Image (cartoon, rainbow, N blue to C red; front, side):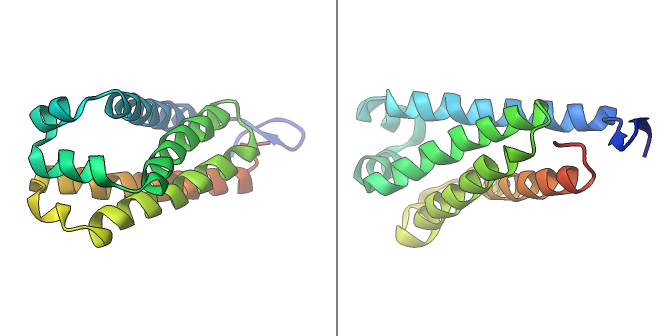
Length: 148
């Protein structure tokens, strides 16, 4: 670890790369959320198919709320990572919990996953994995004193 001032480690280049890509990932989630919330049922059928459109239309409000907390919490957490704030962990943890609620409902609370293409299932799994990795990354960077 390179130290620039007494007790302050230099921020490695890969920290900025990981944090920047993570922010872009979460901003894509925010864009998807805004798009989904403004889409008519007919447009959802056209874009996602009848089964997913019907599932989205009938999902409970807590799942929609979890979706919002997941994407906005993730984006805020990644912005705080880029600002090197150790408080980034909290919105990332909230985002992770919201991802568990949202994905848990989709996988175990409905039968909609039986009609989802394999590529979409991989994406849903990737969302969970990335959320876990972001919490781990924030904790690791706090321990290394990159985040203050």
